[in-house]
Image 1 (cartoon, protein in one colour):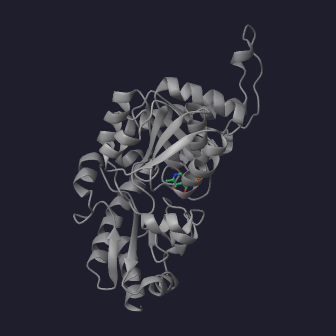
Image 2 (spheres, helix red, strand yellow):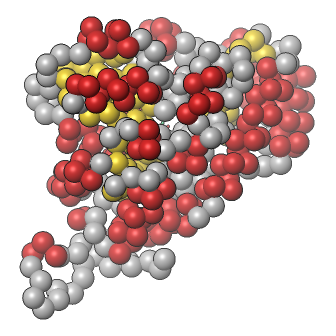
Image 3 (spheres, rainbow, N blue to C red):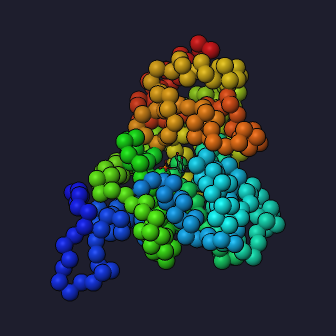
Length: 359
Ligand SMILES: Cc1ncc(COP(=O)(O)O)c(C=O)c1O
């Protein structure tokens, strides 16, 4: 797919205002090609790409919810989404309740006549919890509310929410979809009627993707299957190694039999992605030292790229969350998150081993 780096297009004879092609209207050749690609990746009716993952999430919520509406949202979400829900939605007159992803009886108690949507993440960041997605989809269908899920972490290689009945799947294309940590993009995939409404809202809000970035994202997606399957396998081996290591006190990875929702993850996903988090016996000091001693992983936030990244979420992705919220959710200061890249697994195991030995 070439880059069509043109703001607008010549008006063809016999066409009207609504046929105008303009980058902000999300309808140039690079947009259209990506929309088709994204929809087919998850076997969905339609898709839209946006300027960032947060543009996809905020535009979707701002379209589905209006002043006076209510949202049910999973309790432990990506920090940016958590802040949008807790800080911005109330300012726009939208109420919310956080829900326990594994307690449908509680959702039943919290749902209101003005509840319009239920918002989840396929696997939570950074604790890798797997919600009861089948119950969420049934719950939303029974009440005629919109089911939305952030599918950034498993990405379409491992899970395709529309195939299971989710109305909307949201993505930070910045992560696994692009895979090279060199752009910011977002996508929403799902029901054609919802995507159409959100596209109109994005046209007004202006959160469009530039054609050059669309081209790069399109190119990144060409290798997503190969990259993510390698990351799935590598992360599973690393998680098993960490689980057996005496310096590690806790490991969060849904591919491990010890994970509380492993059976569910096995049923829903084709792989468990490349993200894991851990706690060390030595606590915060050991966590800092581990990060210092690692030679291959780079200390940086973000995830899903070809390089292995390591971070303490309390200081990066979840720094904006109130300390008492982080504590309640289990995002401790000593939690270390690893986004496994595509380096040789043996090299990573050897490097992690030497760093743990030095603690
Ligand atoms: C799960 C998840 N959703 C959404 C986002 C936001 O994406 P972006 O940074 O592309 O706006 C992130 C970013 O880290 C994320 O991890």
